[in-house]
Image (cartoon, rainbow, N blue to C red; front, side, top):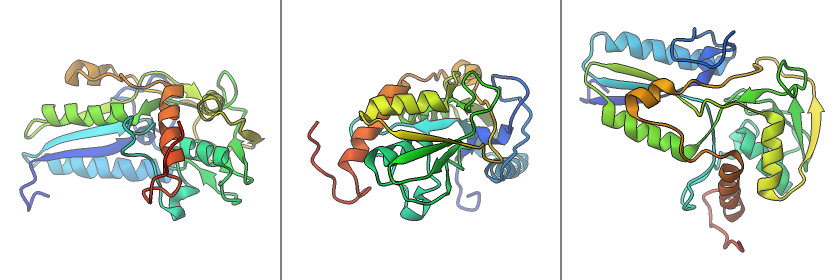
Length: 255
């Protein structure tokens, strides 16, 4: 990038770099102690960028995403992972696949990237891994953010990026929702009574993670405006129903 005179870098990082902090909510100065390979790889990339920045005039923003959900409200874009990645996709994708009855009959954890405890079990059911965490209902808690809010955070980061400066920001809502809460909202959003099987926890998952987004609000004037768990899932579900082959030929939606 430097050799090609790139002036600005916005790096997509993750809350997984924090691991499982002792205190909530997570701020940008919370110690980074990742507990899974994804978080470790992202932290290594951050470290490389920070080392590079010491001798560069590049404007750099590092955005640590929390758990992204939703789709473009106008129906242009949605989540369509490649087939080989589908079984390791996001929590919403796992729920939608179960609702559509197309989840593969493979015992692979879903949501590794975001460390969410889902396991594809049967053709029409969803396995939740871990019900004995120290949370209000025993399942993991995450900070879910609508992709439209995430896009807005990138726009504001680009506007505020300053040469020879590095900005580091959490991008989340500041509120945590449990896996059980998420599945309940997904059932309402899809209108499908998704079958759920509760299973033992998976190694590498952490009990509770949610952000303190005050820094990004203070410095970039950003706050989540579009995130509503059930509404975000309804938007994503509409896209899923009309694009059952991903970005192949879209279907005409009845509603």
